[in-house]
Image (cartoon, rainbow, N blue to C red; front, side):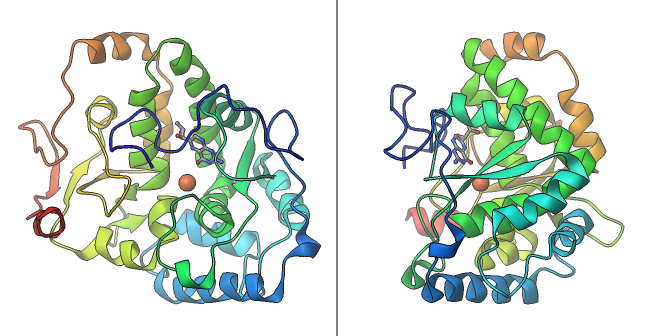
Length: 295
Ligand code: HBI
Ligand code: FE
């Protein structure tokens, strides 16, 4: 993994060719029949942990998506099965890829309502953390939200925006928007904060930390503020941004990013722990967790 705040913690450089057996768009056959029992067991273990933890913590759209796709304790889902429901609900399809794909490939898929999901699953001794998103992170973490029409539109808008941001050399700013919403976003609800970020809902420890720990800041979502804020790729976040609704998140992207990028060109990056006078502060964190880890 590259250093925090870099353009894209994952994406290999564009010059990389698709790996052997992958198509030009990096897709591969999921080969669902080839998963071994031990791999299905890893899925079941991870699923059981989160299924017990997320009710009351994950947002309604996520819980509805889990149910709609019938993602269950049974084992690694067959993309052919979940795509029958997913496509009917929002026109999205999950496609299997070997792992991380270059940004332009990634954005092209999202812009066409295809979510690239890692085909592999982590080993039983990697339950709590792994470098690269596996099928549990991608399918359990990301795919349920794609059953929500508003979020489905947001993800396609992100894909289209990503292709543009690349040409305008603002990918690092857009990657922060992805990170603090799609991966690590929180949402307000009538009964308190809720999770919707895939990186959180697929992690037992961070599902608790993001909502309950006094260490991180929790700030009201503001598009430009987020795009100026570096992020952590190797540990829990030091700040989480809270959206009022998925509609508000989608509306924030339905504007011309050109003037925003112009202002960002003249603006300094913020410190990851900063709290600005204009911030809507939900939690002013102690940062004790991060400082203890950083020593
Ligand atoms: N590739 N398979 C995959 N999954 C991702 O989440 C992903 C990726 N490539 C690039 C990427 N994410 C992000 O860095 C972009 O949003 C910038
Ligand atoms: Fe992800």
